[in-house]
Image (cartoon, rainbow over all chains, first blue to last red; front, side, top):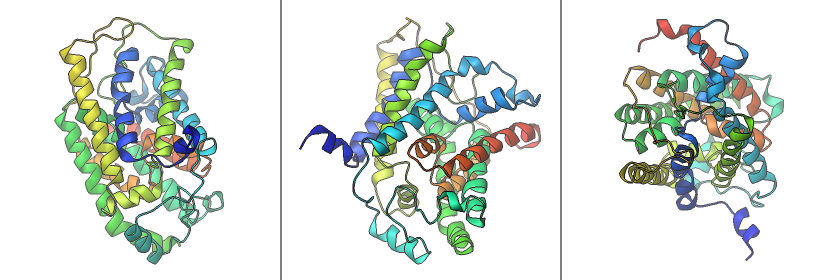
Length: 191
Length: 152
């Protein structure tokens, strides 16, 4: 099997996880940067819509590296999907697939369910819930918590910061509660 | 800019060309995000339904490698490429990590994405996610607006 064929398959956790963990030393050694992605959203606010708010009054240009980093992630997503894309459908755990199917999610062909994450849903109730409300909670919540999965769960825990453990546990509590209590209701509304 | 994740603690300023190396790191990690399928809404659902070990394996092994690297950097006092001592800001506890953390967790389960994967999903052609990203930026801005009135 040639290398490209191998790369096109989904990568197992024991390959991807360590590579993601290596971001921590790579960024530290390239330029004393702590791994963290959600701050890019803050820098975008500071650069584009500061509106005189004290929270956005800082030298965002010094943090511009973070914007280069997330631009790279978008390019990487493009390369990963279009040059190295998995030719087969994603393998979703049977239990998850059955639960979601019972909730009305029927399209398992892509990385994201086309039932929800398609352009035609932007101006629908689905779009309002899954894009607008969901996205707002991601932006508001990560900033309120001072970081996201990269800044707290990976960088913070790697550096033994107990506030990051509190944040990570809180992420999981919110995620479990939403998945089991809220999502069945949201999907019944939207699908 | 301490107290914010992703802080830059390098003393010397960096220009456009110097910043390109973070673009390259981002490209590699975007590819990993995509190929490990952690940008998939389905994988996030599996994680919160405890139906698959995949996401726990990714995050757990990433933390393991991160822990080991930070320990090695400190133990052998490994310098940055420009010769500076590596420094990482300590995090300070406030209640925002609980309240904000729970709110983000809810958003994570709805969108199937944390901030990094949002960028990767858009790059991968899921154009509707651009709306999610704009809304996440709006959420960040509203936090900045309400910050003084929120419990911390």
